[in-house]
Image (cartoon, rainbow, N blue to C red; front, side, top):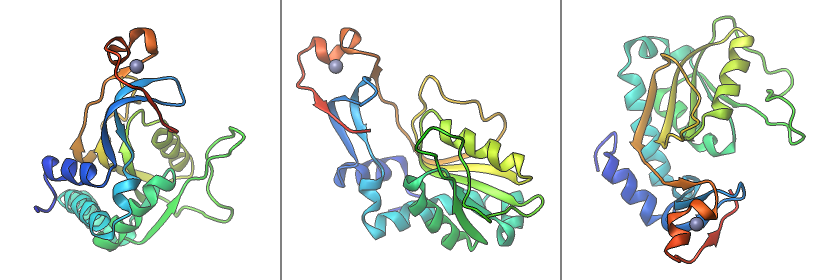
Length: 204
Ligand SMILES: [Zn+2]
């Protein structure tokens, strides 16, 4: 195993742990896909959580601007799936702290826990297990910017860009593997439905 792990090594861990499955899946949104990917299934195992986190921290440390700010860095995740990544990256980098955004179940804006405040110009690395549309990461970035923090980079284990991905401009993006999946908006457009491949409903 290399550090950071290669794309093939990451994919092999995802398959071995059941985090990545081929088939014919229907998501709760109605989308059909040939692939199921849930990184938390791989993060159940400490050695893989560590391998991915240390790999990402190596990529971040290679950026001189980030390296210089490490003792002051906050590692911030938009949701629970990002927490094992956030703590792993913080430990490997020896960064200052970890915290995360809270999403209101009633659809309100993302927020932080009460009394959690940013320092002026606080440098932040946004982390998550996966970047697809970037909706939550985009919300988190805007929230941090509105509170005076300075978002330096975005780091994810898997980059799986969706056609509707948010534009993060010139913000540096670090990832361990890039995966493409086919998505179909509904059954009538789905190649797998046309071929009669058995369909499995999934919860995400
Ligand atoms: Zn289908």
